[in-house]
Length: 291
Image (tube, rainbow, N blue to C red; front, side, top):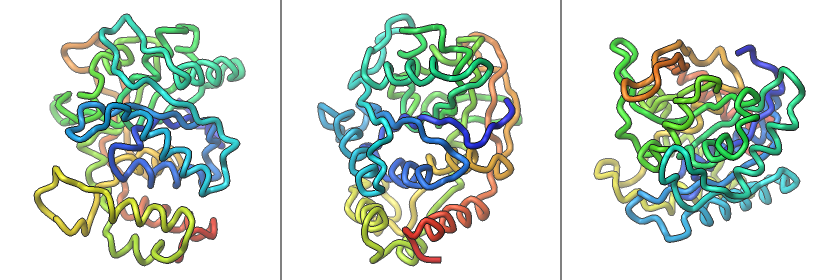
């Protein structure tokens, strides 16, 4: 599990679902410690207002981000619009093909990391389509609720609900290196709208795009904070943890009781102030935001 920098990374994201994916992808693209090999689009079909082609919306936003950041040379393929129907049948897609291609291209003894910001449909399909990639992958998944003290897992979480078969496919595979940035841990990384405005408002380009996404996205499920003064940046947490592992703590735990018993990694703590400082400093250094 030793970290190699720059870390070869593919980001698989349900970007169309919310706001934090966009902030996480933009952050990853300006991090010198991360070597972004590809960005793939994921579905988010259980969301109450998801369009029929929800993966297409994720793909559109991914393309917008890459265009605004002048990084369209990074491979960006669309994933499946549907979840897996069972743990044995993959959902083939260009995104799954890309994961296979990039993993197989890794030198002997090295791994491609996959940051899964949404459901696991694309990476799970990839390992079913080509099992030879399993020892060549390290998966970092945003999902589950977890109590480290009792090692109690809950799968009643948005990303997990969007494709439970895909999650089970990955965590039941004993040869796969699997890390979870749980919702229990990442929920503590909260951005205030005032700080977003201070760093990005009026900057143009990707900064203006991120501000607009915050301001125009209808967070219909949130009954408190109707003015959207703060937002949980679930997905940013895993990007910051990958960029600087000293900002997060992870330990090994046994998988959920209804899965194959094996050890996986779960993050139990993150340094929220340092993650936020690093985030805004990165934008300023890249000339995309203010200090």
